[in-house]
Amino acid sequence: MSTYHPFNNEEAIAYVKEIPNFFSQESNLVCREIGDGNLNLVFHISDQDTAKSIIVKQALPYAKVVGESWPLSLDRARIEREALQIQHQLSHGHVPIVYAYDEELALTVMEDLSDHVIMRQGLLNGEQYPLFAEHIGEFLANTLFYTSDLALNPVDKKEQSKKFINPDLCKITEDLIFEDPYHISDNNNYPVTIEDEAQSLRDNLDLHLEVALLREKFLTQSQALLHGDLHTGSIFVTQTSTKVIDPEFAYYGPMGFDIGAVIANLILNYVAQPGWNDSELAVQEKEAQLLLTVGNVWNKFESSFRALWNKDVQDLMARTPGYQDLYIARVLQDTVGFAGCKIIRRIVGLAHVADIDTIVSEELKETAQRKALAIGKQLILNHRHISSIEELLRIVQDTNPTSRQGATT
Image 1 (tube, rainbow, N blue to C red):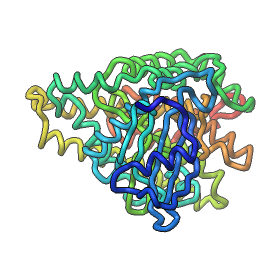
Image 2 (cartoon, rainbow, N blue to C red):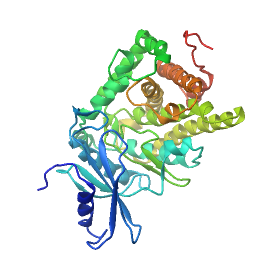
Image 3 (tube, rainbow, N blue to C red):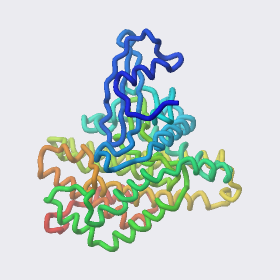
């Protein structure tokens, strides 16, 4: 049996040569470690003669962003691999293929997506992805519906839930998203220029109440198997393809958390647009396109989810007239609230987004940060009263950044 140790390039090459029907022992392979995330090693291996390629991802027993002082369970590699396999089965075409895995070594070998780009970078480059909303809406509908009690026998659902108890990574989410931004914490990370906003987050007890209710759902509501960290940095895209990667935060939780994460990252790109475009017209065009995408993501999810429900629901009581409407209304409210939480943590919390952090102008960067926080707060404070995606879009459009004195401009 293999003994766990972090791979080097030569070991990664030797490992993939043993995978049946992919490379041969004579293949002229080259390997480079390309992991730029916080938790893992990622090796890209290609045959110099044929250009055939593959990815090896290996979990580290600690958070790479911090070091060995932040230990993590290697079982997350199994969780990620099993989530990938389930999501690939349920949403074929939107998840990379898993070719091999080794639980002892905490590694997964999967399809190389080098012909795609990370969506966050693509958006920063000014690209548009006309099929993204349709693809991600389908992915969300299929993966969330078919792993829920709506589609699974309750016994099967509970048995599957046991496989995705993910305490280490859930604890990261619980702390970084639902606690740290609202208190003094060593994990928080923001410039002194927005200290007044950070203080406002800590002082706003009405906001704390809504975050506490959302945190309770994250802790207790096991609606479906979530990706758990579904942002534009964990989605690869082309003009015609969308691939979801990195579900190592997967666990059974509230559906709106995944949907809200996608929407939050589109909104973060939206508030950053003045920092990336020289003309007001270009800013307006990009903002309009992003808002359209946000609306289309929800609408595609909802229409697909309702269609799956009407076709394949197994829970007899879920066929009760009116139940579907109430269920989806609650998912929308959760989506809005979780989107707000995700936005706020990306401004004052440990991990930010390049959409805002790489804006050259410090003034425009601060404006984007303040606008993001203002939108995030409004989404959280109003989430329990939202009844349509149009209401979310109006909040995004109508909310202005605060001044340094905290007054609305």
